[in-house]
Image 1 (cartoon, rainbow, N blue to C red):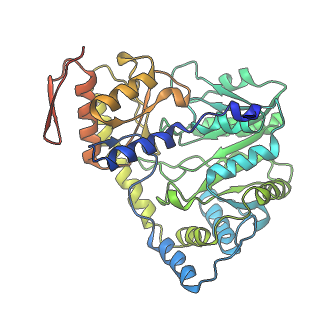
Image 2 (cartoon, one colour):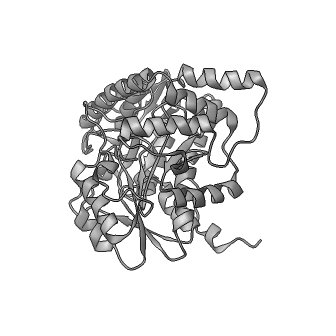
Length: 405
């Protein structure tokens, strides 16, 4: 079988694979707890459901423009004005089948073979593979101070003649870190000065805690003309708990948006009419669902952090946003893949290995599930890993005795 050189370099999505494993275990009736999930458990907003239902009732579900239906683009324009204080036109907007596709199409529009794309570590699992799919070279940047806050000096050290773009994801998956306003200001200025593309992956932009807000990149952009190389990506998946609707979008200069639209038109055509109407409904409707989700997640975060702080040898940095934490479990094993498999095998708790995000010894633990899942899941992990914990545990009335050391 002849497989392309690029295809041979691409691994499967670790997070999607773990979702599959969790679903299989649940289908078998196993008492699995999924602490590796990347989707909120709340329901989609009523306005989204109503809008989708109305289109279904009409029976008029047709092809859509490659860059999105007018009502969704109008809703995105209003959203951008409200949350970014930036007025854009429909020619700057492209709706896609999720923020992932928006990023992928943006990379395909700007990356040539051997071009380098820089992003801070820890990073979303798909970034390296997406860059490689374009024939580019992913360049993760590891902060030398050991924190999750990226530093300009670390990024400047890896920028070279082949550097084409920088990707920033704040609030960050997997760490939950909200990058400082100073860093966002500096990276915007630096990319403008160097003539680099800057892709802002803002999918968790409104899921920020403690009364804070994510920094608006446009606030520090001096060039918002057609020569700008700033691309902002967002979507409905996380903030509206609409992961299955697969609608995201990009905001970019007119010419770049035209190129991206051409690419998308040959890949998938326009996103589903039904799902675009639902997304437009969510954006234009009541925003109480977002506020409610944020409040729930902030409470869940506090519970998880408190549980992890009582976990001997585990170091956790309090997430400022998203619904992920990225604690250091290196006391219990440097190989995070092996550690996550050990936890799954022994106590049926799903976590995501830090290696998938570019940092060994860490595990991504989600707090978008129930309080019960969080507390019971961490209790199982403590029993599994901490040999100072009691030697017995009950899981669904089944008694387990630790027989390893």
